[in-house]
Length: 164
Image (cartoon, rainbow, N blue to C red; front, side, top):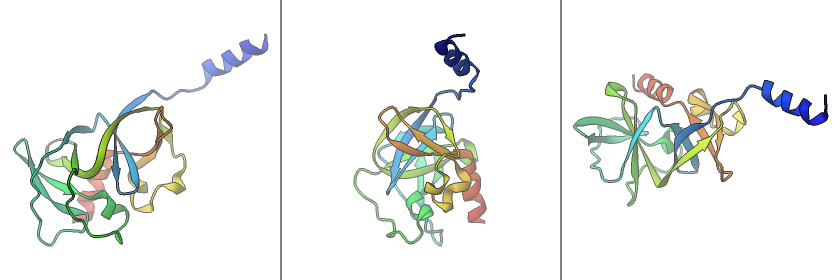
């Protein structure tokens, strides 16, 4: 067997992960990727209503297509010592989940559709402890930008437990 044949044989036997497509958003200093199977849409214009006595990461509620959704500030969830939430021009919502498990995540900058091969558990030390349990690993797109891949379903479950 030639050297190139042995390389081709090894590549054919190597397990490959399927390419994923996700919505990439920036929350503060964190670039996060939410798989399209969970993320539903991006909302540019929305009303935000305060929720009395809510956790610091629950910045309000909004009506999206007739459904009242909690609006989550992941910056405050990741870094509770972060500056308190202030609504800024140009902020958007990533709506994810379905039914009673739907949430809206507030973010800034333009969302990015990213294609990537998941790297499960890679660079786990880089992922903040507060979201490590809902992170699948790291996602690097074709441009070399790195995102923390978030399991939206696990995030919703974690938030439900945190709210009591």
